Amino acid sequence: CFCNPGACQWFLQLSNHDIRKQYESGHICSDYNDLIDGLPTGAVRLSFGYMTRKQDVDKIISMIEECYLAPPEVRLQRIDIEKLPKALKHIPEKLKPQLKEICIYPVKSCAAFKITGSWPLTSTGFLHDRGWMIVNTAGMAITQKHQTRLCLIRPVINRHKGTMELTFPKMKSMRIDLDVPSQKIDIINTSLCQSKVCDDLVSGFDCGDEVSTWL
Image 1: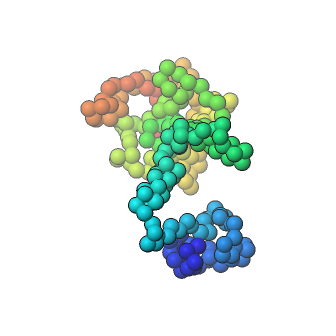
Image 2: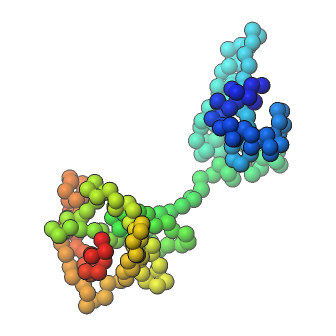
Image 3: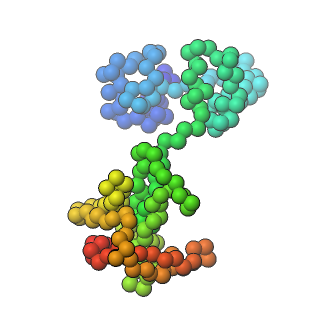
């Protein structure tokens, strides 16, 4: 690593504890341990001398741009899969875009709910996404612009039980039904927000005094 432990530590932003831990794990100079506990143990150093030509530098810059700075989809287009050695056949698959996580926001301006399995789609998007919002006594939607702690309200949807549980740090959770019983329906006309983009009037159902008191 640069043949200089101090420079290596500085460039890789490793603490003294990280350096000692790597050494205790068996890492020594010129070994093949590139990563230990997810942290790099070294770096590639480029040396320039009197014989270095401009085209050599251009080649290095081109390699860095193509292999490290170009987005995965561009790098994938440049790869000739048929010519790849067997040991590198897995690389094209890794470069393909992968969907790793989907989140919905059941309650406007509150925390996200992470979807772990399949999820229904509706004509307006994911089921229950932005299906609820918190309003004040005037029927105006409350957002994080006015109440930043809304982000601490975390909804948990259980479609099998037909419930949504609202949690907040150091408070007992509140559970509401996903489907509002017809006898509890109380239509409210409210404005989403006062702006040129989302000032349309919408109709909603009051979820009851219990959850209102909890909020």
